[in-house]
Length: 273
Length: 211
Image (cartoon, rainbow over all chains, first blue to last red; front, side):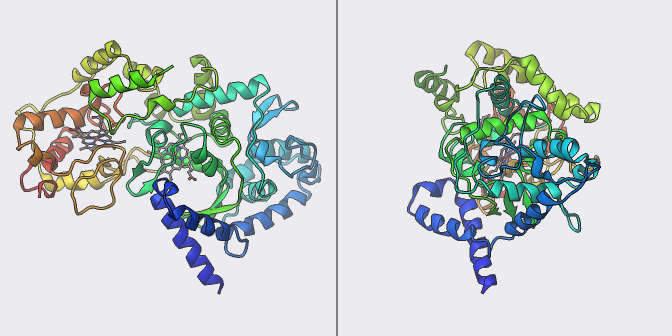
């Protein structure tokens, strides 16, 4: 029974990623919507196992101060999770920085829990036999914004700076192939080999549907992945050097992408190819 | 601010309707970032990479212009780029441009090389299928570039056209300023021999591209 649901869901993902975004215009749209609803069923999406693990980690006492992360302020007040992810990245006065969820969690681990984050960073992306606290925590926290709309604040000058730098980085070409994000994500209905490429260069439906579905359970990788991982992988395809985890360019790009996606509904963790 | 009419003019002058991004949709919601600030962000993110990797993302004069105009370069700048890039093209000493199409077929299919997940000994591929349709039998092709099916046959196997293709693959911007296609020879991704093999893949009458 569960297997069939899963197989159907997988077929739907393959179907939608192959045809996206051409399909978005035709009659199959309704069908895809139906599959999407099914995909977010906790029983058929292994991403929800990460949500459960993240919930435990969130309240676990750790670090030299032996406290949980519940004292961590994600922008809406200490320990307040509902809707926090929908409004990130954002400026945090205590650190003086614009941070995405992953940067913020690292900051809270260090400053609230007194946790040495070296090991957490080493396990930032899960692998065989290697769980990732970050992936699990992000899945749990992001899920608390499911059903809400992307709405990043762009009031603080640092937030505006991030959006502007993110946009510049999106168009910045380089590497042995002269690629930028725009090479692959600035045109309608294009694909690389058979993989459909969302156009993220203008605000609207495509960035909304893209950003509203991360973090996601990647079937091809058998793991829950965050935006940090997605952009790390895109920079790999771009033939650029390895981007530092939780660093400012990645956050700037995320601010830019979230801004393009304003108003998009969050349904996470989703499940993708 | 780019306008539709300017975009139309660009299409007419460059003849690349299917390949230029729809500039009219360009995002201008945010203020342009100061280039020095962008560099500081890049340093924070890529500053720990080995020096040779950092050198790769240092834009040369051509990319600086392309980045500034987001590829939609004014014609005077475009002329400068084409001239500069054409000077980089080195032709085979014996004048022979067609190599082995069977090798070319493999190079076109190979997308490896140049990624941080590749080891240094990985032989670079051309990854042409990421962006182009080539042989009709290969259904897994991307659409960032135009279809190259029957490329040589459509050009009557004209040696002058084969020479143009050599130039295009060696340095795409020697033909079209700020082309999205990589500059394979100029950036030392592909060797002279590999480029000749690709020209043969496009222009050999026996090549499946022309069947």
